[in-house]
Length: 114
Length: 111
Image 1 (tube, each protein chain N blue to C red):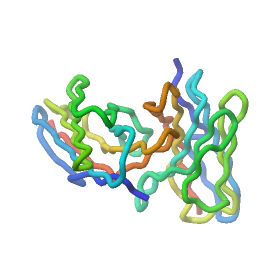
Image 2 (tube, each protein chain N blue to C red):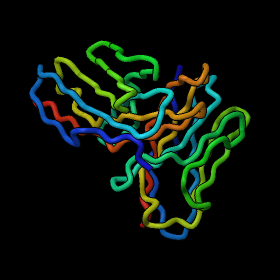
Image 3 (cartoon, chains in turn red, blue):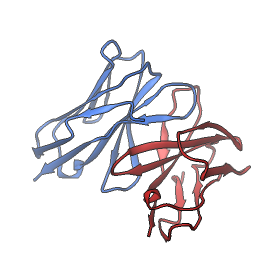
């Protein structure tokens, strides 16, 4: 099976702009989670979607949002970008068999906000 | 917020030596997972250990879990230069697909 794919891989934006990142999970995986990784805060959970519904959300401002489509592909959006939003954004998909699941990560989208 | 804390923050060893990394966490867990990350790329899943398991092996990897001490260790035997990476432990606290990560251990294996 193909792994988790994320597009774009690199992105440069300026403050105040908005950005949309895309994630395609492994075929058959219905749960998609997003994480932000920065040198200062490390890896932090953003949100998780399952069957087009957001099931869980991390402690991020409302500028961060996401959605999931019927084919399990997911997008996350960040509006009114701030310098501190510069980070590696990672998407992970899960094959939910019971609750002892493994998450498979994509290569990430590296966002630089100038 | 960070659930786990890895120890040490950085580790430098020679090829062929064993590398041990430790992880402590704060709350009860369903499972604990170890991931590897090369140079700021995506995370690669290494091993998952359930809360009712004490030890697990996968190739050159050995993971232990002590839920009474809320700690886990990852042992990489006979390290290779290709093992150079950052290693993260992550805990799953509930039935949802949410992982809480530690800050990681940077492992450098010199030829």
